[in-house]
Image (tube, rainbow over all chains, first blue to last red):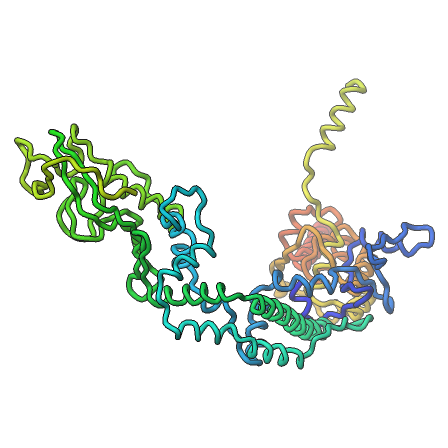
Length: 381
Length: 152
């Protein structure tokens, strides 16, 4: 169909449809002959009352596509060309970056708005309901001391003046889409009309988008302003911790180490003697394989040595491949559960045993963690 | 064979897939489109004798059959359709559907006149000009043999 608009074919525009020259074979010729007979088949009409086949100066034309429909759906018909046209045309006037362009996206958005609400609670009271985005951002905002420069940046983006200026610029451009005149037309001429109509359509759509943006900005409350400043601050800083849950950026790209603190906890050995383990951060990195690991230099029966960044030994687990909020939450929970509840004193599972056995290989010792009297775990997840 | 059996076999035959036959319109319309034939060619059909007298055929002109890709169905513009139908009307002969070039279309009527018993295999494999030369050679050879018989 797109070739039609670059061809030198003689086309016909009638009743909002593009008519193309009818191609013939003996059967089609016979049918056309029947139609032209006064007693022959009546011509079936489309919903708009347009004929299927029309004759112009002895030439037969057949109805093809609706012009309005081509125009309305051109973005889907030839996305590449439409996007190119949009880019070229909108670049002619001043460039405008919306609110969405400054807000964090991708992994950081997933961490803040989807993973963090699972681990962070507003109060220590048992509450079933997870925090909403607004509640969470309010909570985060209250914990941060955001510099004034971030509020200034938000105000600059939320300022409606450039938006209004842009709308004025667009008002000066061609807006109305006039249908091509009815009658014969070449494919090339129709293509030129389509190009102009697409430009007008792009302008109209951009204007609608800006109107919507303007309305949203007018409705932006003080709390929304604070939320945006909070997100901007976290995105710039790259790390944040609240209630033992946190994350920190790895390098300069959109990759993060997401962690949850275990707090102090107690494990018992074969003889029911208690060992107090210090707090550590169980983390999952968004870069590389998705596996729970301990950030600090740490020793545990499920860690092979006493070094930072060791993977926790969890066998028979189907490791996820994709970075999603559910997968990260599950991995963090699995890692913490393994450290706190995975060790079986009777089986002495893991790389090491808490109590020195008769035949044990002296690698990692936990004697320094042993406590004289039983204590309850200090922190629990 | 009783009536029921006859009906059954008839229906079975009708249901069977039939090979797509070669149609004269397909062939002619494809040649018209390929060689952009127009009114001049129609005039040439009316004056075939003059055309072939100018181009005396001899053995040096023996050539292979031209290749022509024929689609199963052919649709052409209104003008091409008119030309194709006019050619089919003027050169109405069973060999026309095996032509692969305008020249073969012109020769088809003469070839059919000269030998109407050529098989479709021969017509598809050999150029019509070559077949016509072959036919003439055969006739001349037969005359020579006849003349030689009289002398001896």
